[in-house]
Length: 315
Length: 315
Image 1 (cartoon, chains in turn orange, purple):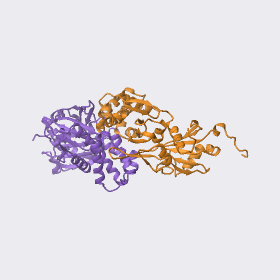
Image 2 (cartoon, helix red, strand yellow):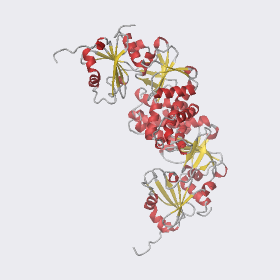
Image 3 (cartoon, chains in turn purple, brown):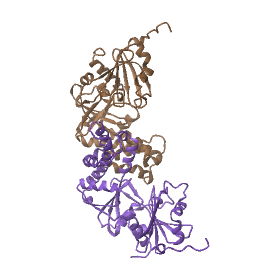
C-alpha cells in the first residue's frame, strides 16, 4: 500500500482511453500512440443498465486502474451522449465532418482530473421531411474512412444507411427499425407462437429475403405470411424465425433499392458477426456489390476525432 | 324445483343460437324466425381464455338455459374452428360461396342432444403466391350481402380486405397485421417509451396517416419517425400513439391503393367503433369512397349459412 504501483509497460504507451458506450454495453479500449489497441475490456453497464446517473462509478469500475495510473484523455461515443445518458451532447446537423464533430465534443471533468469528451450524435432531414438521428454510428463511419459518394450500412437493432461526402462529411442517412421489429414480433406477436428454436435454416432465410425484396411495398400484409407459411405452407416451426428475419431484412434492402438504386450500387458493410452475414447475403441476392469495412471502425473513428481535437498527436 | 320452468315467450320464438366465438370473446345471439336477434349475451371466454379444451362448459355457462329450454341448432363462426379451438374445421379454398361453406360446416353433438355447426374458415393464395387465411370474417362478409365485384374492409387486430364475386362468392382476400403491430410497438418497442396517455389527437393521427399513405413502401424506416417526431419534431408525448396509429393505417391503405387502385375504388367498411372511424378517415384522405355496411353482419351471415344448410327455414 505504501509503494506506488509500478506502471506496466503497456500503460506507459497509452495515449487515449476510448469508450464505446451504448444502450446495453460499455466497451473500453486503451489506445497507443498510433491509435492501436493495447488492451480492451467490456461490461454490461450500458446506458440502460446504469441506475441513478451513476455513470462515473460505472466507468471507474471498468477502467479505474487505467485512469489512475495513466491520466490520458477519455473519448466516448454512443448513447452515453443521449438524453438518457451521462450528459446530452446536442446533435450536429448533417452534412457533418469529423472536424465539426471534434469541435463540438462535450467535455466533462472526471474525478481524477482528466477530461472525458463525448462525441455528438448527428441529425438529418430526409426526403420525406422526417427527422433522423444517430449516436455512435457516425464515429464508426469516420473510422471506416469512406470515399466521397460511397454508401455504408451498419446493421443493428436500428440499422443505418449512411452516405459520405467530401472531407469525410456524412451527408445524410436513414434508420431502419428492422432488428427491433424482428425482436418484438418474435417475442410478443402471434408470429412468435408458431416458432421453435433450432439450428440455422439458411434456405428459409433466403426464401424470406427474396419475398421481402420483391414485396417490400406491402410489408404489413407480408408479415402475415410468416404465420400462414407455418400453418399452410409446410414451413417447419424451427425455420420460421429465420424466415421472418429474411422477410424483414429483404424488405429493408428492397425499400432502399427502390428509393436510391444508383446510390447503393456498392455498399460497405460496417460491423461483424452473424447479423452482418445476413445483410451481406441479402445484398448479394439483391445484386448489390458489398465490401466489408475495417473491423475496428469504432476505435479508428475515435482516434481520428481525438486527433482532430488535438487530444493526441496527428499522424 | 319440481315444476318445469315456464318457457318465456321470447324463447319460444327462437330458431337458432348463433355464436361469434373469437380469440378473446364469446358472443351469443338467440335468433328468431326472421333471423332477428331476440337476445344477446357475451363473456370473456374466447378461445385463448378457455383452459384444457373446456369449450362446452364455457358454452353452457353462457347459454345453458337457452340450450335447455329451447333445443334449437347452434351455429358458430370464428377462431373456435381453428386448431386452438374446440375442433378444427378445415379451411375452404377461395373462391368460396355461402352454399359451399354451409355444406362444409363441421357438426358436433352437444350434451343436450342438439348439434353445433362450426363454419369453416377460408384460405386463398395471393398474387405473391403466399397463403392467407380468415376465420369469422367470411361470415361477416356474407352477412353484408355484397354485390359482385365489390371490396370490403374489416378492421381489427388483423384487418382483412375481401373481394366478392358472383353467387356471394368470396374471390380472394388479404390480411394486414396493422393492429397487432401497433399494439406490440406501443407496448414493447422504443417507440412506446416516449408515448404518454392523453385525449385523442386527431391532427397527429391525420399527419401520420398522410405520411403513411405516401411512404408506405419504406415502412421500416418510417416507423423510426414516430421516435424522431417526439425527439426533434415537436410532437407531444400525448400525440405519439395516435401518430403511430395513423402511420400504420396509412401505410396499409397506401400499400393496397398501389396494388389494386381499380379494385378499391369503393370500399364497404364492416364493423363499428373507433377503429372503423380511423379507417374511414384514412380512406377519405386517400380519396377512396367508403360505405358503412350493416352493423349486424355476423348474425346475418350466420342466419344465411343456417338457411343454406336447412337448419332454419328459407326466406
